[in-house]
Length: 255
Image 1 (cartoon, helix red, strand yellow):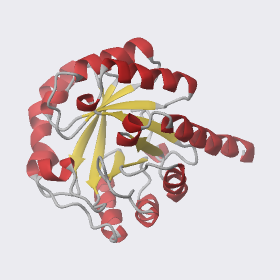
Image 2 (cartoon, helix red, strand yellow):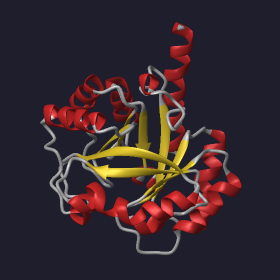
Image 3 (cartoon, one colour):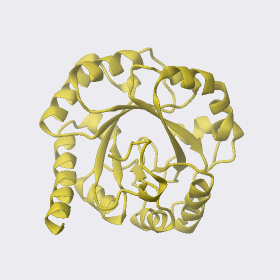
């Protein structure tokens, strides 16, 4: 399991095994739609639920987390946009440092504000180098953070940025095309980052077909994140779950 703080640094990269996370935006879910996704996840396993978004305008987050904890066995990991989105009901939090940008508030500022609450929360904290990638459309994340995403066709910039995050001691890398991305992060960029660092690699944004999911996994992602498309097409969850399971079965056979 990639979200394990006890893992020694030399074993931080998850070799071979693949994982599947569903990102739930509280603004886009009702209790009924959340329960429907949970029911699907019981039939078609999901490794993690990420909860959060770049701009949360409702009070739904706590209720969504409560439903997940009551009705699902999958770990619930916060995907926060600022220090207000800490909720101790969850199992852990991606402590995102926006290393692709140059806005100090999202590199360290929000972390300073949230540190006392995080220390008191009991949440498992996963220090994550968060990297926004230009996938053809300005996203809420890039607008709200006031940062310029990494150019789509510049895998070397992404690789060097991830490398810097690893050298700074971050424990995970998250390449994100953003909610509603026109296309996923390119396989070339995923592969370049995978080659550059030993950290677990999370990739999301624009993965809305099984073919795109397979390409992202094949390029070296350890965790693929599906969000916006599942809210529109819940059946896609089953397809991705089956794909990830097939990768892991093939790995087990080879071993």
